[in-house]
Image (cartoon, rainbow, N blue to C red; front, top):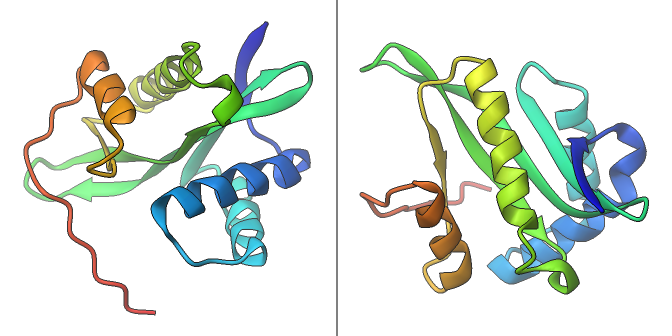
Length: 148
């Protein structure tokens, strides 16, 4: 049975492993030390981040982060950004991603966020299909410029 719960500091090793898998999928060059430091920062700042994990048989098999620190000047509202979303390859296509997003939606509504945003790789058709099935709409392109 799979349950979605808040992630805690003792989940660091598994979180880091899943994030390393996500970084590889994105072609992102980072270190395990950076991922671990980012995890500890997020867990230590629950006013800025809500971290959730899908657990089966005592181990995390999927993770998701809700970044709470986005404010829209033109709508005068706070909104959230979904990040760090991955389900272990061996557990994909079993509804676990939907469970994680549902938990984030619940949290976002409880915190009175006006909207949620997320980014998906153009070639990640299964993820894009999931987002659209849930109700997300794509209306723009995502650009980034790395400064460091």
